Amino acid sequence: MTILQSIFLGLIQGASEFLPISSSAHLILAPWLFGFSDPGLAFDVALHFGTLVAVVLYFWRDWIEIISNIKYQISNIHIKNQKENTRYEIRDTKYGKNLLWFLILATIPGILAGYFLESYAEKTFRSPVLIAITLSLVGLILYLVDKYHKHRREIGEIGWLDSLIIGLAQAVAIIPGVSRSGATITTGLLRGLNRQSAARFSFLLSTPIIFGAAVKQFPDFLSAGISLPIAAGIISSAVSGYLVIKYLLKFIEKAGYAMFFWYRLGLAAVILLIYYIG
Image: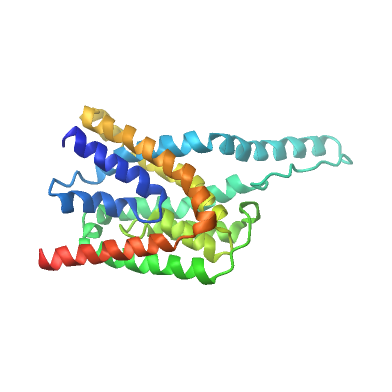
């Protein structure tokens, strides 16, 4: 793989990881459409290091706040246990007091799906026809939920059931074309979250799942070594991912998700046309 090809795939990974258009589908389709070798799942995971850097750089203050909420609870409970009649208050933050536990719960289905279905993700699920079908179907669901379902709840109002259902949706995203962000954002909207809250929860939820996938593949990186093309891909993935997170949160509040449905539908049509004609 050349440096330019790697940078190109890194830009695609960074953008499509956080846009609801399926990063795995685009990483499979790009080599297929432009005529160079599919680098495989291991290279896909390498590019996830870049998106991990992007999401951590953008949300590091948020993670400190989320973790601090738990530490604050533990500290107050300890004080209450020492002084039985002492009253204490939980800080009022936009994330609520239990979001860390909710993110952990939502991550578990994705971990199980990755563990048991990894071999399918590497081979069976990388079919262009399957990708075209999932792109269209999930895009249509996202469009309908965004347009017709009421979504008024803030991220601080997320509960245990919301987290579990969104986590199950993330597990389904192991199938290319579904889109991890597409599945989690759609489910968040279906649970009544507003557009920005659904996206923010999806982005925060990406941190542990991307980190886990990267750690799992880390021994392979050490044994093979990190080449210049891979390093260039990781950097380009980080840059594009950061920019997408920054501007998508502002964009969707007013514009909604309809344009991503039409993009997914158009891409699916192109895939089927090339597959059956070309």
